[in-house]
Image (cartoon, rainbow over all chains, first blue to last red; front, side, top):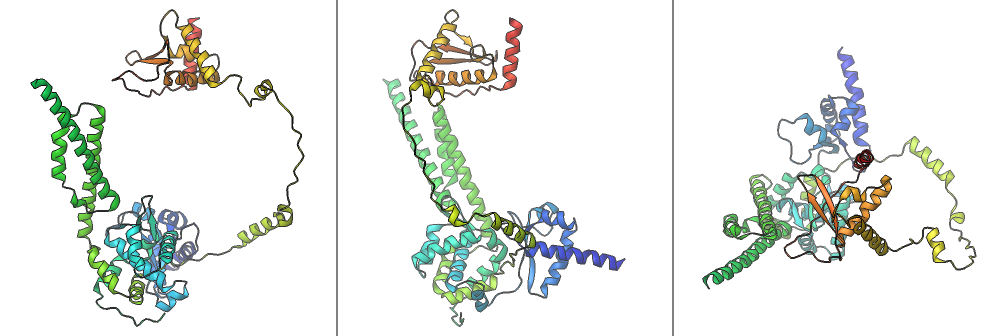
Length: 194
Length: 281
């Protein structure tokens, strides 16, 4: 009986990893209702098993809730509307970040932009962000980078040129950790070689 | 004399009131759009102003201005509530303090911090046997560039002349201009109302076929819009009448306001009218 159950979950975990690793839509990740349709209503349990397994690989199943973040007790409707991703559990080293295609300037610009928008309650005029970035980056690169962050989903922009945090920032960036780290740093540390 | 003075002072009060409301709307809009501190807006003060001028409003425009002020104020109050909520969360940071920190840090330090909080998504883009098969069949059916980019051979065309009647026959030109059509339609309305001044809307637009009815309703709407005729709506009787004007009226009389009246011309309505028409006969 126990073996049957194990086999049942093993096949579901395989299916879940296929769904989550391979991109099926324009945006990566899978919606909760899609997982329910493909894996059955016990999909949260399947994801938990997969998450435990992925820990060994320094990966995790990340849940991004729609709108307000979920409280301790998550309702099934909230899970259905949420989007699930596989993300890195730990952190990349600067060298690794460069290897996956990010220049140090671009990453620093992204960090500043995200932190600035968070401090402005999740919304900031593009002009203000451009001003702060132009202090350390050339103008042409600032424009290019902001458009790139928008294209990748880190930011979104409305018709009034207001910038917001995009779906990818919500999925990838631990906003609280970023702010704590930024405010907790007193002196610049320039020991990183990229 | 006193009455006259009172009238002037009332007019002035209305003028000042309008200006105050406009200023409030602009302030609220600036807070909303430029992300200014919503607490710059003193809600109690604004409510007092709105309350002060409210008894003065008599016409619709002023009442709309009053409503817009309240609407804008409500948006600012929402922003204030969001502000308080954000301040109470663990994510609250003083923006000026953060800007200072960002200025002090060099880019290497910034990246090092960011990498500790960044957990990028792992995703794979793949090609499957199925998509390979599709791509192969697409390639097979694709016409070579040398054929696709061949210059189109232009055939020699012979020019000639065509008469207006021929163009009308080919439905390239209408046999009469829209203005002419409208004029003749107006004449028809005048003829039909020669004895009874006005006619029921459906009796005028209704025709043998549904298509013709729609066309007549379309023309009637222009008759009314351009001042060739007037619509009379009798809500209690649920009846609409149309009355021709002897001369087209370009502007409504003072104090009269232009309003749009949507009249559905659907197939069911037309069938109902047609049945009634036949029963009468």
